[in-house]
Image (cartoon, rainbow, N blue to C red; front, side):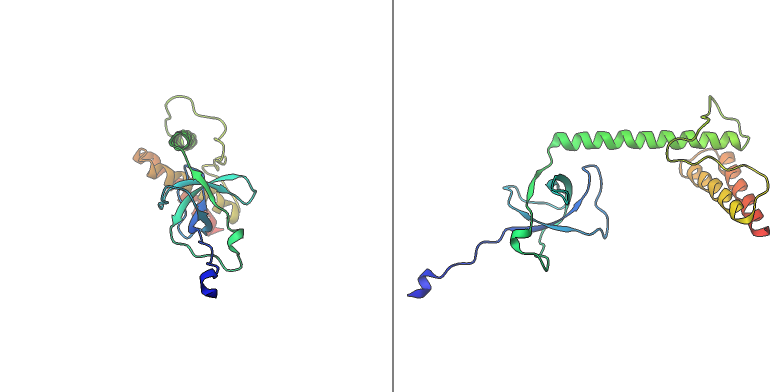
Amino acid sequence: MFGLFKKRPPKRPRLIEIQYRDLDEEPRDGGRPYVYTWALKEDPEVGGRVFVRGGNGESTPAVIVGLNASRPENYSWDELAPVFRFATSQELEAARNKARRRAEKALKDEQAWLNMARRAAGLPTPGRARKAPPEGYKDLPPVDGDAPPEKAHRHGNGWWRAFKAAERHGRPAEEVEAFASIARRWYQKRDAG
């Protein structure tokens, strides 16, 4: 008789794993996932873009990285926060456009920096070259001169960075070789010091 009134345990929500990421960011391999509850009508899918309550308590974009999570140790069911909603197609499109503009600017800035390096290396450069490097880029080291080994090493690294960028972008062969040659000269000075 008492078995009829036995209280059933409450139904537990589905648990998924997310990584906090902007809508245009990919999940990181090995990135630490966070466990959230899933109560939306639509089924979750790995790679789905959602909004959750972040560490600051505000709505934060995230990406689903796992579908069958377990409740983390030291957390009660009540402490697990829910996924609020999927990102809309308009939000995803705006994020893609922002990422595209950012990538175009990064390419333009790197090309401008490579043109500055080209001019500094004494190679002909069409048009006007910038006088100051784009944001995020350091001033180019000198092409030649004397420096203590530590400084010669830094100068070599600066030119090696230009060499690798020129090579990656398929810039003219004489440019790629000029940057590599300058870097090697600095490394020789470092090693001789």
